[in-house]
Amino acid sequence: MKKVRFGVIGLGNMGAQHAKWCKNDGGRDVALGAVCDIVADKAQAIGEQHKVPHFTDALELMDSGLIDAVIIATPHYWHSPMAIHAARRKLHVLCEKPLESRIGRARVMVQQCRKKKVAMGVVLHQRTRTIMRKMKQIVDSGVLGELFRVEMVCSSWFRSQAYYDSGAWRGTWDGEGGGVLINQAPHHLDLFQWIGGMPKKVVGMVHTRAHKIEVEDTANFLCDYGGGKVGYLYASTADEPGAEQFTVCGDKGTLVCKGGKLLHGKLKRSVSSHISGSKGSFSKKGEQACTWKEVKLPKNPGGKHLMVIKNFAAHVLRGDALYCPGVEALNELELSNAMYIAGHKDKSVTLPVNGKEIEALIVKLEKQRSTGKGQGLRKSADKEYAKLMKRLATA
Image (cartoon, rainbow, N blue to C red; front, side, top):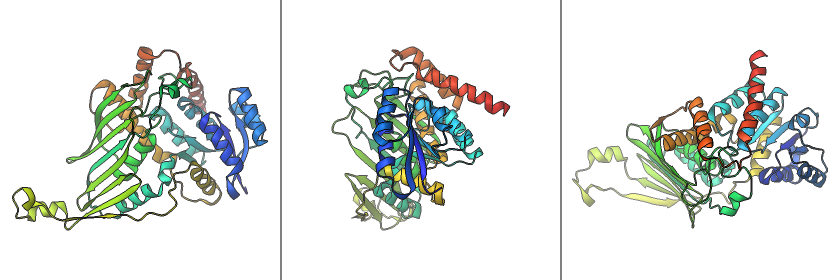
């Protein structure tokens, strides 16, 4: 294999872009083999635009012999059937975020790709941002010492009502499976746990504060890491001006990512030793010096989807380490699913999430709130998934 021939499944906003990148910008390792969408006119138009075969049936695409890997850019509920079908045909899988809307099915996706020995990556391209990679490097090096507080505000995802009205599946329980937590925030949920670690429990609130949609546009959550160590996350598509701020506090110092800059506050001695060793009783007498410096970053900011596609092809061809393997993408979905259960049931949720509980909750919310706008995508995808599970059980 000289190049990885990708077949793009789902040609909406992201899928059309993936096809364009694979065709025009993939470099030495990437080629566009074919495209697929259930809307025939769309599939034909993009296929002819890029001079590649087009399909309206994803299984016909997978069986065509024209591709080595799929890029799955369908609505979320269809990620699991498409990934499992591809793995069964020994096709490598690059999936748009999130892996699925429900953690149980996402676990099956990862397990099937591992079983069939095909590569599985997820387009969580924020991991390619140099500022985030530098932040992780510093945390992993131990410079901050043991972490005790992780805070993130991610409200730079403003969406108008027109955005939600533009697609049938947007902002629906039966079409999308959630709101900001499942659509926009997965990138930041991934960074939150990739750098700050996975909590043991979550508690918090979800609200539909400003938009006329079935799902949440704002989320507030407190995370318990045990031993008094905590995390906080706020996500919204209803803030203007939006903000992105990520703070990680440790025993030996603090990192703050804000406004495209990374600041490192280094303590003269650790908080734990200063607490026991300081002779000051309170106020200024008990404080110590903290030296703040801006961390130097590479000129290339990263953060491009194309970087993930190229990296995935390099992994298939030469074994390069993936930016985000499927198994690691499970974590951000664990978080969002836990937050849905905690927010809608008003309780503390211990991780890992019970897969059956989140499935039942989504069905309940769909019955209570669905307007039918999502066109029953969950039910149709679940029927296909059920057929697959029967085949796997008898294989």
